Image (cartoon, rainbow, N blue to C red; front, side):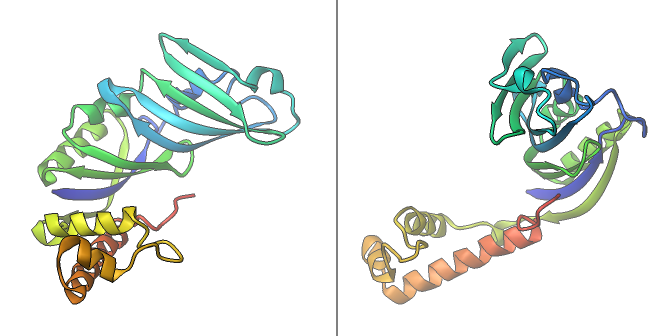
Length: 226
């Protein structure tokens, strides 16, 4: 399994298109005066559809009638808007015309995170069976005019993956409140559940935690992109 973090410039050959495709499904133009539009999160669905969560700030309250409780579905996709404060809204958008989503859906790669930094740049975390899939994905995006920068990559082997026993015990511990404050169960409870000694339970949990924390740090899962 291969992991890569990449930065993608959604401009085609360096030229900004007429807005992000998700913007086209909003009830008002994304560049309307007094309106701030920020894509918070992107994801991709089956068949090459893209979806986004978009924060809208209506500075002067001019567009309340158009935005409040808006919902629409047509051939281009779907959009619904909810009001979250006096002049702020969240829109959830699914568009059927996202070229990046279509490229990814044919690549054999798996997107785990897509965080925009602005309307042009977006950070992807991608897993694939091997580096060849990643290289083919990057090459295809470049052929379509997108700028792609590989920021980091890593090959994962069996040493990086939880064993079946580790996953079973760490999941039980999590689901039953071992990581809550105060704890709902302790090591004695875990040891009794799995018919092992307390010291063995402690070692299994520590080893599993180390693998999970290492994975998070290596994939920058603790780093916020803003």
